[in-house]
Image (cartoon, rainbow, N blue to C red; front, side, top):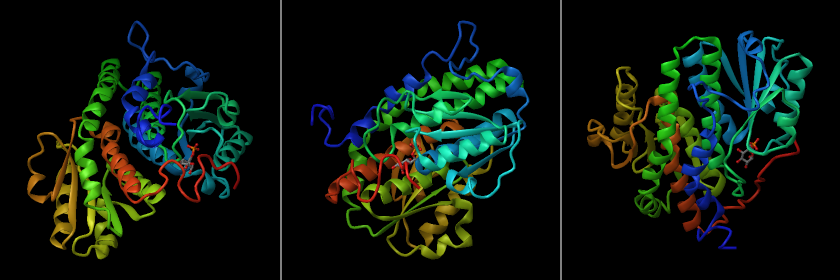
Length: 371
Ligand code: G6P
């Protein structure tokens, strides 16, 4: 009913708008009085965590893209090597695992069959398994050594939104916690990132305040046949997730690419008028921003219509953006938390305009419990 949806037409839209609260809830109670990070159901001792020399993240669908972001964060903050793999691939390829490997299973539902089978296999190899999950008491956390629960609240829309954002939060917390345990980073640096995370809910709110202009953009793309998404670094999984959302609910051909791969194929797809979403990294001392700008110029020179998501104050992007969506200023590793939101709004609105059932897309299930 509309009451359950709190006045929204779809659960998905309601869940998109709940994200500031969901992110805040997922951050709640994670700091001790002395400023140390604490994770309630970690259950692995500091010594067990210090013995870990490799992390393998396994997940499916949107959760897999959270895992891709986690790799960037964990390796940067802890220097522990991280692999990310689809659960369905991991299971059947005889992966190298032992007691010093931590397998991190990310699953909103905690019931995805491939992810469950994958952790069962990992445990037979004596690896430690940590679940990042939104559903208390579901099978995956029950069969894991430790768990970080996300606090998104029940997610009804089949296409994951607040589930994804809170998975990202849990991944950042895990990365920072490992850094704290390993002592690879000074405490004040960890505290600084946690403080930046605590500012995110208000920043998501400001992105949501701009929903109407994203909806107008969706209206002007109601007859698009194909939409591309470009990103790099932590913006690459955001591009993949933006494309997945369009496939799932708008039934539109959509693909995400790493911007640096353009010349290796994707640029051949560019034809006049094709919409290309570009997730622009923050302006920093690294070369990410420059590299992204040159990719954007290349697709635009071939007639693409560029829709750029770029931080406030980024003026260099202006000449190359046919449409500009402003993002709050956040460090590159945290940018997915704000950058994915306009892409969710765009997909939700476009699917709605096309007359599709946004909450129950054809052929899809909320959780895939059979292979
Ligand atoms: C299904 C859902 C997706 C979800 C994926 C993984 O495909 O439609 O939204 O990302 O399963 O689900 P999980 O519950 O394991 O995160």
